[in-house]
Structures are given as structure tokens and as C-alpha cells.
Image 1 (cartoon, rainbow, N blue to C red):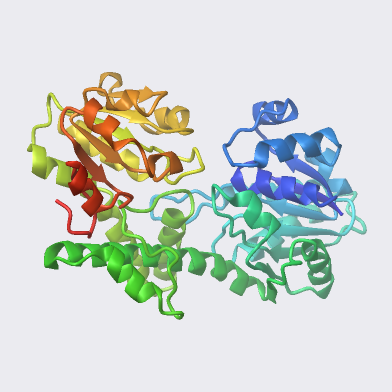
Image 2: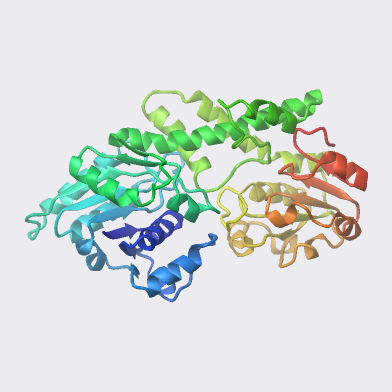
Length: 446
């Protein structure tokens, strides 16, 4: 098929590249001319394992093109995906202005029957608004004879760090449509990705729109729930890891997303939980669980710094802390809503200096930590350099290279052998045997 995708962020670039990988001809459209120029030169604007090589190969072989010109791509396309951002507004509701602007631009360029697909995460009812925008735009065109369209909701379920694999081998594909014609075309497009026999779920549009928010809110709920259980463990003397094994072994519950930590971040969970709460508010429904999930996570991001202040005192002037991990999760450079932002901000506010290291995110971190004085934070290119002369190590992101480091070297480089483990990566018993003071979450550490 011929496909256009508007937006070249995580969702758009991964989706377009994977569609091209399966033999489709894909145009990726973005109004950012500099980004398009860089993509055409083979420069990838995001870090995602496996993506760069796939982009370059498909571009080189002519299946993947990049343009800012809707008129070049849309008339040739059977399906046009909208994959632009929907950032939260001040009230937490998702801002759909970029989705509707993309819909209008698509409508101005369509020549024949076209399926317009909401791939962006959008509030319930957005497909109706997209449909109205397209209708209104076509109505004022003098050359729109024979132009027909359908609107489809096709939410994405990609996990940053493994997004390519998630797209190529999806757990499920959800297609929301009220048209048999668009349904059959979408099924044809996605069957090539579901040979693993995982389902393609077809439903009405509003159910598809709700499904995306419900899925992310459920995963966020599991994280916040375990963080509350960790607090109970710390108070009563339990071990949250043992509790996780005890409940996660129940087939009705499972192990996924049952990890106590310093909180979740990223582009999806925080934004989608906020929109779910906001959607309820707009419709006279109090989303009590989702509101609590958001509140617990906001508090959890302050936990590590608060424990460091408990140990070292309210005045941290003269203290320097090494911090491993800036991105909100490993295998990405994404800093959106990253717990590291809160932890660093809290520590610097109390007078501390930070020596940070992340394998991929340090350049992106400089943008998200621009409010931190330059003399209060450094971005090291080596994980060991961050430790030299620091008062303690803070682990924030669980990159694989941090899982089993040389603990003797850590002890040598730090002023004191103290680790604040925001991801419960290190075994308390092992750390005690090595003479390392470990502060963890819900595991009976300091």
C-alpha cells in the first residue's frame, strides 16, 4: 500500500519505518523542515534501538521518503496516519490542535478515497472532530469531486526502547471504525504484522479511543500501587520484592509493572492519566483511582531526595552526589517527566551539586534541566568519572550497565560507600556483605 504518516516523533517515525520494512511505500511528513532535511541525510532525531539502521535501509531502497509537502505525499496515499503530539494543557486535558491541523492539511491534498487514521493518543470524540474538519475543508474546495474518506482510530501501544519490536510483533492491534471498506483495508495492512496470531481487534471508534487511555492508566496504576505497598513494607519491615513474587505469581495478576521505584515518567503514562482524569471531569465523573495514581506518582518522585535529606540534613551545601541515569527509562534518551528531573531539582534546591551520567540522554537532559545552574550539575561522558569524590551514588535509571558494576571500584571512588537505589537494582544482603550502605525502596534497607 501507499501510506503517509504525519509526524516524525517516536510514533510516526517508528510506524512509518516499520510499514516500509514490510514492503509498503511510505511518506513521512513533518512541518519541521530542518528535521526532514536531517532525516533525508540519514540523521535520526531520537534514540531507539534498531531504528536508525532500518530507517537508512528503507530510505536507501526507496520505500521510505521524508517531506514537508502534503501535496507530494497525500494524493498518492491510500491511508494517511496522524501521529503528531497531543501535549497536556494546564487542566491536564490533551491538546488536539496539531491533530486537527494535520487533518485539515490532509483534506486539502486528498485526491480520491483516503482513510485518515488517528494514531496519536487523542481524547474520546477526536475522530468526530477530525471528520468534521475534513468535511468542512473538502466542502470549500473547487476540485474535490470524487474525494471520499473514512476516519479510523488506531491507537499505538509502543514501549520506548523496544518500539521497533513492539510494532513488528504487536501484542494486539486495535482498529476502531464504522466503515466496512476502511476496516478491510486496515485488516489487510496489519495482517502482515500478526503472523504470531496475536489478535487484530476491530471495534467502534470511541471504544478504540478509550482503550489507549485505559491501557496506560492500568499500567500506571500497577506501578503506583506497588509504590504504596513499598511504603507499607518500609514501615512494617516487609520486603516489597517478596510481596511482588507472592502476588505476581497469581495468573490473574502477573509480574509486569509491579516494581517499586522512584516513580514513572515518559511521554505516555503521565499525560494519559491526566487526560483520563480530565475526561472524567468534563463529563461529570470523578476518576478517583486515576487521580490517586497521579498523586502517588508525584509524591514518589520526591522520595529519593527526601531520604537523602534525612541522612545528610536539610543543608546540602558542600555535598556532591553522583547520579546514574537521566532518561525516564533505559534504552531511550527521552527526558519527558523523568524522575531524575525532580530528584536533581530537589537536591540542588537544598544546595547540593550533581555529577550525572547517562549513556544516551545527557544532551536531551540539558534542555530539561536548563533551570539548574550550570555550576550545580555536570554531564559526565563516563559512568566512573561521575563517582570521583562524590558523597554518594544515586541510581535513577536501570540501564543494564548499572546492574552489576564493580562495587569495589564504587567504594574506592566515593568518599563514603553509600548508594541510594531508586530502582531496587541491588540486593540489600550483598551490599551489606560488601560494606556498602544501601538505601532502597520497600526492602528493609536504610
